[in-house]
Image (cartoon, rainbow, N blue to C red):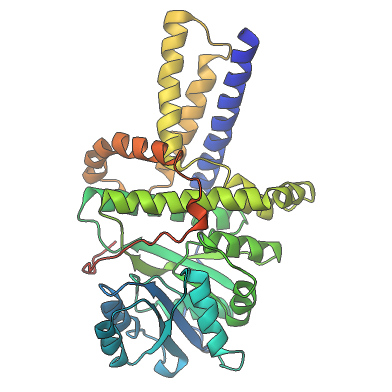
Amino acid sequence: MKTIFLIFELIVVAYFLYVGLYTFMFGFASHFYRSKATKASTAKGRFVVLIPGYKEDGVIVSVAKDAVKQNYPQDKFDIVVIADSFQQETLKQLAELPIHTEIVSFEKSTKVKALNEVLGRIGDGSGYDYAVILDADNLMDESFLERMNTLHQQGFKAIQGRRAAKNDMSTLAYLDGLSEDINNNIYGKGSVALGCSSSLKGSGMSFSFALLKSELAQMASIGGFDRELELRLVKQGVKVYYSENAVIRDEKVEKNEVFENQRKRWISSQYHYLRLYFTEGLAALFKGNFVLFNSIILRNIQLPRLLNIGLVNFILVLAIVLTAVFSVLQIQLGLYILVAVLVDVGVFLAISKEYLNGRLVKSIILLPGIFLKMLLLMFKLKGANKKFIHTPHGETPKSKA
């Protein structure tokens, strides 16, 4: 019995030691990230900004109006709204704007299908140099295309911009924005600082047009297309650069049901692609390709961060009780303390200064409930990556991140 308990302890401690070291290392490294020069380039590439939307009548018109307000030559970019299942009144309003609207329809809709359909219509002779992908609720800062162009002119083929919160009035939206901020720092700034590829986030992304068209044409992702796209790029030796200065405003969820569906989709796609590419990830490690190993395995094998934080601290408390009352632990308590400190400090290091305020402390009261929701979601993932799960968006005023 002691042997079985020891093996269980070793597995638990080894996992959280890995999570702690990873979180601490990448969170710490984020402080050494330095943005590339962003002085406007004299060479101006031609962009197509793709905004796929499914039943996004509530936000798409205002988003389209905002999208054209770029400090970039008007003849050097086109805004293309990909309208799937939009109402006729919405389509009429879009037709009055200086944008292109492409109507698509599928028996089973996915973002990849919509993008591939429109990229096929655009064709190879369009003259576009770069393609930006936004969500239907995203607002680009006015300098977004200029900053992306400057980086592309420096040779970057794939760039992830910084997604910042568009709304944070509710506590849930605030915490969703905080989670995005931590992701930006660990999987964006930290990854780039350590020479790895930034993660792709599904929107606020800019690519070489030819590269994106070629890669998407080979994909049929239902959920988490950004994960597959990143892995395909890294396998080709194309690392995604993270740009802190190219900012888009992203709507954060304010309803529990939407939060749960969104996280279910994200978690399911994470483990789907981990299973799909796991063998290639291990092979990459033995070939010395740490960048690919990190993108496939190290980043995706982890439980969601909130579960890691909740579980590691719960296990620490449990370890203290078991040591003090029953003296049954086979591994020294100090190691449990170490892994909990690494996880907690690593997350703290990845929180930007603007979130370190009184509101963060007040919002912590919601974390136990969200932790339980996330824990229960782990038992509801079956089949989630085989169907399209739509995240609805509502009209939200622009606000500072």
